[in-house]
Image 1 (cartoon, helix red, strand yellow):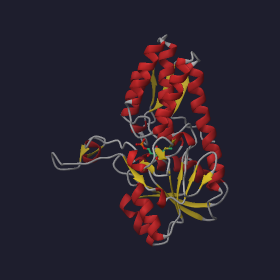
Image 2 (tube, rainbow, N blue to C red):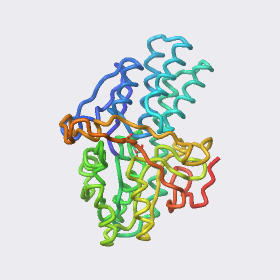
Image 3 (tube, helix red, strand yellow):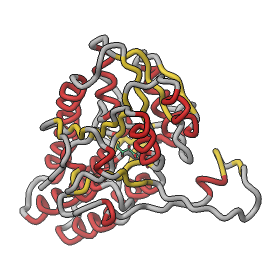
Length: 325
Ligand code: MRU
């Protein structure tokens, strides 16, 4: 099992790996209050839908530990809800923590449960998902869905990892994932660490790779899955799904059931986060675009359910037509 925990509770505060510094620097920051955890989520020091939910839950536990009263805890939950709008795991975690606060339960125990259940869901998902993978398979993935994005194992990445361990996976192609480069900076780092053969490709190469018959399946994570199966995930996922469809290649989504939002009927109702234009115009604080270059930077797109071959959760491998809730 991976020993990476993006978020770790300690007797002396909440440790968060600063993912903006990877792969060159492994920096663990210690947080003592909810506000700094909220900032870490906004700044994507901790990112990935499940890890965001876990960090937010522990952020409230920090406040509880310092003696915050019920109203202060609920206000802190509201602050967490403002950090990133698309990953529904954040809202599921806050619903759960708010309920614990209202019922006078131990907030830290609830946060531990959020983290532990996510890890267990990943391990189960890996078992179920690895069964879908054929022998000698070549996979294509996007963004980072590994230990860094979750309670410590991974969703889509967890399935890849399991498939490799069981001798089925030949290679992973990892899209670099502009603009934040989670594929090149984080997934490549995890793949190397886990000894899984891989190659990073620029995002624009995916179609060419498929046309060369170099990919057997595509697998991605999710930030929010609507009741009809439409799925929001990192920008570029929709392009991969469309290309996979055009080439007759299976396209899988893997996510825990905490990523399913049955109150959202379809993809049109999923809020899509828009981030700063500097994420596109700059790389590591170096400007690569002309001054005042106009930019549109949605962090996610929505893949329609009709393009998704199967959705793997910890409970089942779901096939279309999808009906959640
Ligand atoms: O903007 P990010 O890095 O938080 O986006 C992450 C993704 O899009 C992941 O695919 C998704 O959260 C699933 S992580 C298991």
